[in-house]
Length: 485
View (cartoon, rainbow, N blue to C red):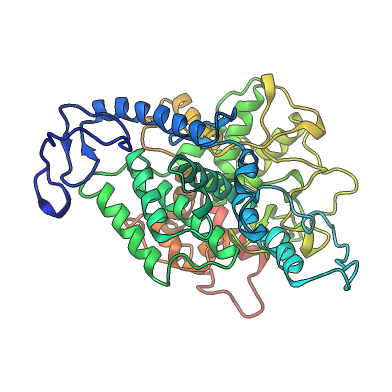
């Protein structure tokens, strides 16, 4: 196997140095490095040894202080506050940049329309104002799920810095330390997309506190290098799409009071017909689902239901996905959701103000709770104790349903819903502008979800672009009608 620069990897007769990740015997070493190329069966053994060694190094660096670990492939400290005493010699801004927990709800997110005021201009200074901005304003640009993922990635990076005695250099991050972290993640056999998410979190943390780690265009170069190094010519996992025939079979499953199964059916149907992102399913609240609000201006009849969401991942402008009433009650998305919500006791609570003002549109509703909650022991939890689903549970819901209809679930993921929804609409002739209105795309990124084999012919009677003054409600419901449910 070729090493760097095309040279053949050979067995290095020299013993590995103390900093080596693991002792790998009878394995091809890459000349001039402490890394090796080995078979997958051996790699698992090496990975396990590396994990234990890194934990030992962290424990030694922290003086044997007991620490808690997150469940991750690369060992990751669960709480960075254990490092506080080791950062006392750093200036306060650097210390805050390293320790800041961006997963916490900021004061501004829970203000419910109340005004922000400065208590005393005499006591304020530039440093305190800047700290308020980075701690309470900047985090709001990301959804709660994205903030949690970014903070998890940042904790992984800081753990790496501790293990290699580079904690004071975690911020501002030096380029060699950053590049070393990328190599560290590669050696822990992370997928390219996961590595890119980790390094994006490190770049974002530096940028939030005023440090530019990479110049314009450099992140693209890094990402391309990671993908080509780890993927090369290896066939990637194919994602299959969910189509109307899948949804019809899901809808006809006999739930027999199984709330988890009924919830999973609704997740698949709403996620596919709505061309939803996984985060939109996870982040939906009960009060986001509104039935019977939109009426046909010509017939005076309700058109269906809406799922209110943000326009895009980092946008605060609310949008909604439309779900038309179906022709058959047993496969109608709206009726399925109505029955599911009744059985799960999911109701909009008195006093809910989430959609009363634009400021509350992007905040989790603490009164109504999640639209798709977990069901401990198969039963609804008390109103204040309802927990949302993890991204793994959403993916597992799709594979569980496919198993129940005796379909091969091997190449399906949670993205199969969004891909299937857009491909079905394209195949039915729904114009691109209307497909983007349902999916929430503002760029051409929708194309990566749509099947190339689907026809690009557009159905007659539907505007090809958003009309002046906006879409008619009847047009917005055309997307979901193409599923024939």
